[in-house]
Image (cartoon, rainbow, N blue to C red; front, side):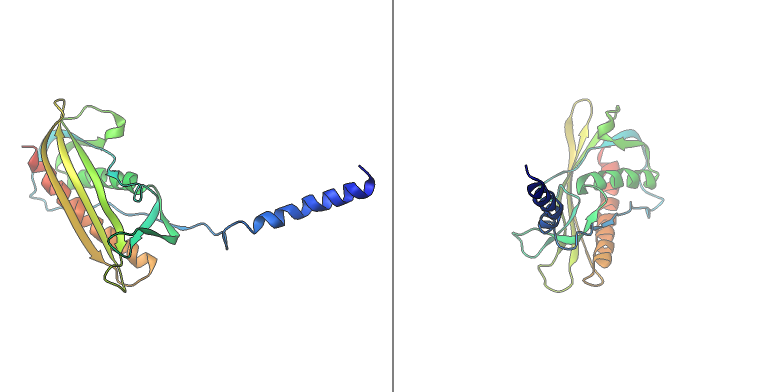
Length: 203
């Protein structure tokens, strides 16, 4: 290769990153991360139990098994907020928050995630059916959380009770922080109802 050809080749390599950069998303800023909190406000006179419970990872549709924050503009569509994400995949985040909510109730001897493979008297098997900002009414959305749950007795693996919890909370405004607050409110209500249902259901 001649000296002039080498100079042209080196110059082409130097320009290559600029050409590739045009293929990247505009802006390139990472999404802002959001998390939710467990329920804490449980009445002191609730049922107390002496058995142990494991909480499974909630099953979900592929559209919800992601760290992206879902939104729906119709009954048949799912989309995502472009500049925001959860700190974990939604089912894993909900599993962790359910465990913490049972702990915060102070009504159960032992509670843990099912993935730890500990011995338990019962396993809670949730299904995350809705976990999106609902825009079907137009304007400001509401957070929609729907969880189906089965309580499984161990070691027989028999279903002793099942329930569906459906909650909604309106966002104060059509801005991501307010929508995340609505998710927090709707999930808190759902988790309180799950705790209040699951503990007496095993008796």
